[in-house]
Image (cartoon, rainbow, N blue to C red):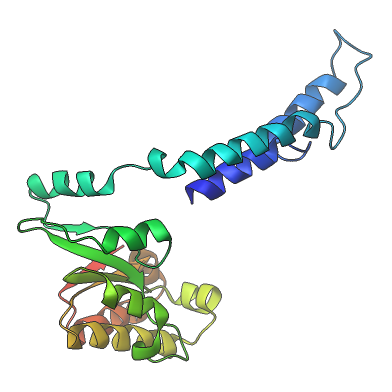
Length: 219
């Protein structure tokens, strides 16, 4: 998300409505009593300066962005040395940086290196889900999978039935346990879900636990 954040900042330099700061500055200009004859800022007036700055900045990111990212391997080793039991290294397959990081063998003593992902998608089996395949191929003994436990999110965000979500959790847990991966289930928005529908929120974590989840994380 870092490149997306920078891209939005650069884009905001190019038009009047690109950022709230530009709009605020235009308001100050048009209401100025000190300089009453100033013209309002045009929609693309800032582009004369914004476009060259954006191109220069994007070029810098393309050439040097990898050097600006923190040293994940070094940080992971430090966390292991101070005794952290589990280290979640990221989402293999989400981007080239994460995928490369998980392809390297790490010597972490007693720390369990963990890959993060999400439950299988509805309409696909666990064996044929690309997201689960990336987790299986990661060089980690454990996986932490996030799943919905708030029925509101199941309906609105996922657009599926509550029973389908339970099936996705169940089949995902079964898949990793069967393949000898230590399985952690991250119950997303559990407390909101429990407040709204306690029975369903508990059924979500039970679906993972019954299939052999080693840990249930209440997010």
